[in-house]
Image (tube, rainbow, N blue to C red; front, side, top):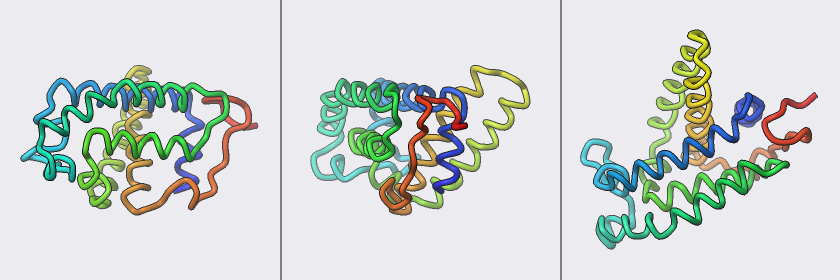
Length: 173
C-alpha cells in the first residue's frame, strides 16, 4: 500500500486531482443528500449519525462542515511539503462529515473493488490520451487507495510514508 500511495502521489497533479475529487463529491452529496449523505437504499450507506439523529441532522452536519473541509483540503493538497498524516486525516474528515463511516470503513472488499475499477478507468483514459479524464481518474484512484487503507485500518503512521522533497506533485529525483 505504501508503494502504491507513493507511486500515485508522484503522478502529475495528483494532489490537485484528489482535492478536486473530494470537493466535487462533497458538493454533489449536498445537492442530492438523500443519496449523498448518510443514507442510500441502493448503497447501504447509512452512517451512525444518520441512525442516531436522523438524515436531516446528518445533512445539517455536512453543510456546517463544508467550508472547513474545503479549507483543510486546500491547505493539505496545495502545501509545498506533503503531510501524509494530514492527508489521511482529510480523508477521514470527508468520510465523517458525509456520514460514510460504515459504508467506507466497514467495507474493505467494496473499496478494493472500487480501486480496481478506478485503476482500469485511469488506464483507459491514458490510452485514449484524454488529459481531462486522466486527471479525474487520478483523483478517483488516489481517494479510493486512501479509503482502502482506512477500511483495513491502515493509517499513514503505520506505513511511515515519506514526503516528496521536490515540492507538490513533482517526482523525486
